[in-house]
Amino acid sequence: MKVTQIPFQKTGFFSKIMIDYVAQKEAIQPFYTNFSDVNGFKNQLEEKRASFSLETRKVLVSALKNQYKNVAISEETQQHIDALSQANTFTVTTGHQLNLFTGPLYFLYKIISTINLAEALQEQFPADHFVPIYWMATEDHDFDEINYFNFNNKKIQWKRNDGGAVGHFSTEGLKEVFEQFSATLGSTKNADFLRDLFTKGYIEHNTLAEATRYIANQLFAKYGLVIVDGDDQQLKQLFAPFVAQELQEQVSYTAVTSTIKELEKNYKVQVNPREINLFYLSEDSRERIVFENGVYKVNNTKSTFSKEEILEELREKPQLFSPNVIMRPLYQEVVLPNLAYIGGGGELAYWLQLKDYFNTVSVPFPILVLRNSVQVISAKQQKKLDNLSISTEELFLKKDDLLKLKINENSDISFNFLDAKTLLEQQFYMLRRVANETDESFVGAVSAQEKKQLNGLDNLEKRLLRAEKRKQKELVLRIRELKEQLFPNQGLEERQRNFSEYYLEYGDTFIDALKSILKPLDLKFTILEV
Picture 1 (cartoon, rainbow, N blue to C red):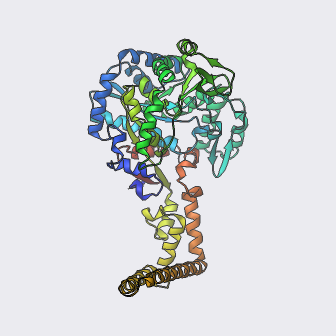
Picture 2 (tube, rainbow, N blue to C red):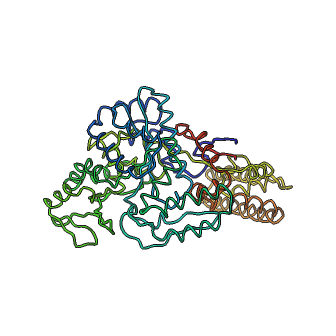
Picture 3 (cartoon, rainbow, N blue to C red):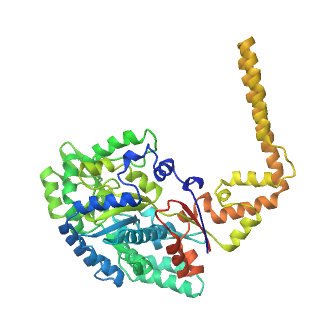
């Protein structure tokens, strides 16, 4: 096993807002409180310690014990749940959708980053305790985003009627999906483990939330991972005062809209708030709550409430009120003694819109940690890269740029078009100076001719490159095949492949390797040769 790291910005796959956040650029600093370093965590600890009550801890532990009552729990996870009742126990959290069979690879990277961060903080602050949390997005309702996973370039998909919070979905119909998946696995020990995990997760549990908890627990219980389902009456009761405030004052809309005006001066905005950022849950729907003409309405239904009626509904049935992407982060921070949220670039980008909202409702804004990202390379693939003289950083070039670089390096023709363009620009610079001193009308003609000749050089360069591609077609084919293996659909493999591909080949050693190498505070992209 060999590990290499490169800066996130050199991969070409991360947004400007994330690159600036990791670098702590001045433009992004107003949108977070503490950064993910030792001093940041020291400050965050004290802020959360002062704001999180023992009463909230009691409710949290009670809810977790209820959620785990039918789950075979590890000693490590049990100890972590019990510790959450103590004033010196804090959490670090990641969240993820209920993707079929964990979905893309980065599910593992998120959770292992969270586990490793908790362990790193334990070493740094030994007087306190730190618990890794996986927050299941059980209330999401976009089934099309989670109803499949990719395995060996095939889409394994669960087809069923959509409607309502996905955590409530029955697992009926997943036996057929299992049979499709199982037929591709072979008959090894690792294949048998994957079959057993899928069967016991989906065939032997009634809902998607139960199945996802089982699978995550099987993979990570030995590290003490605690899995939280936010679709919980006790936890929703803790959040009810913030829901009431949202219904009556629309505080999130006002605060986040103000932040967006400042953020969009330099960055692309990830999500836009609605006037009320809440859904109403029923058995088969999750619809927005809207306020029109003095009446609260549940979108696409006939349900309406007066102010008094909806507040009474909230008091009696808090579990029916579901926060959207704007309010869910606040919900998490209200019910957990949380210090940090670990997420991908897209997630953290919308979290950065929320600091002023948190300040408005007097809840500490957590430290944001960009999750570890990994590119897995087999020893065989690394040998091919070495034979092609492709360095780690060159590997992340766009395919056409990499082809151009390597074709030029292997060409017998040594002509440098960049030098030619530079020389041409120098000559036309002198011509413009002459034109300015003699006849200004001549300047336009000089500029037009410069553009024409530079375009001519560009066209000649493209023709030469096409000719060299034909001449070096074997090299071109080898590079294209390797790039597609490593970057399916020209994207990071962590967003495409499922962990089962690597588990089938490497078994537990794959997860153990990730556990040993992922350092969530390093803030670099990891290349793992296995």
